[in-house]
Length: 264
Length: 219
Image (cartoon, rainbow over all chains, first blue to last red; front, side, top):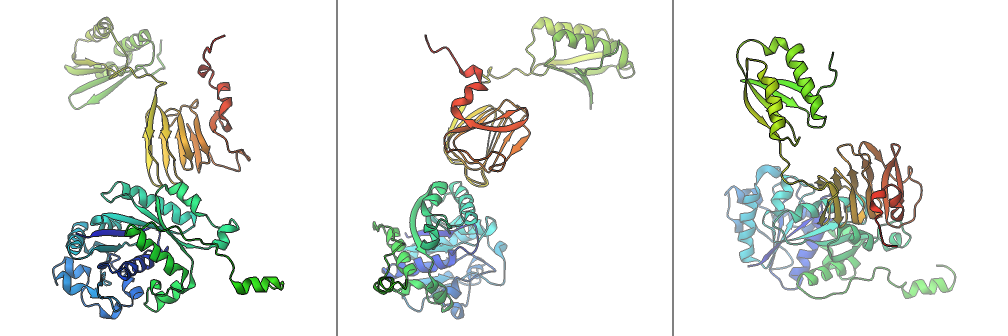
């Protein structure tokens, strides 16, 4: 029996879908059997980030309503044999399925896959309840902004009242320069308020945007700082003790060279 | 003689009348007013066919003699048939200064309410609210909203290890930092009302407004 992890945040645009796609791909990279589930019915985009949009035939709502078997709706990834995705419907809305239906589907998937990653929609309404219905664990994604931290706090409060185990935190899109100058919340500030375990920090990386637009999760590119961060998170999920990434990396040789000549 | 105060209220219900007797005023006043109302001011509803009457004494602690005194007055009116007379007995006489202790974390969107005084071990996050009829003491960071003395108790105070709230309310006074309080050092502080305005002070000055906390400590 595998485990189901819901990726949620409350606020929109903090990187739930990117995180789901990248952690999922990183777990597949480690040789795990993974299924990604998009529960953002009506506004699906996990398929776009994964570059699998054109392979979708059936979706979550079709499975819930019995129009197809679960296996028929699963889309196999183009890079990994053991990575699958269950897309959301784009033509319906969140109320097209009930939390019980989602729970049954997740339970079914857990028999087959080692990790089931559920991409949760923004908000705390029906879509959120759908997404957490079948989850064993939760990853809460936030960015170093007050609004995102506030919403993450709200979500953690709701998760604590549900059957989901103690949630873990991912702080996404950190800009070390801004943190250093005091213009961005630092990790300590966030942890002090949210008071949950940190499972990873991800630096802001332009390569993530580029990768998402190409339908290729960033994790695939080892040159990206965010890719390493996501791989670390995947390893921590697998139980490895990986130290937190150092964000303020030392300047490279070229920068030092420029500084030496007073150009830096 | 006219009675201005409203210690006795008479309400009509489907099958009779309910006498609501105030539980705060002196018992003698109550009897006088009851007598006056029955004999002088409410003749129109108190005469005529037989009416069932329920008497509610509120949370007043009454003896059997007191009850008998009330009944005697009502028996003066021939048409009133007393069905019940009862007082709400406080389950266990609760000490108004008792401190209720609870721990946890009040997160955004959550509301914690307590009747009485509350000692909260943990943080109150921005967007979270703690309300209390008495004092609020937070052993942790108060970053959300705290409302002490919600029922109008202006004597209530709010204290916190780290007092950086979004908003503070005592009784019906609302205050928000920092423009109203000025800059402060980060030590344990408390908020109280001084002639209707919110004041913040260091916790060691609490004895100035709470004399009762200063007990005999030996010679």
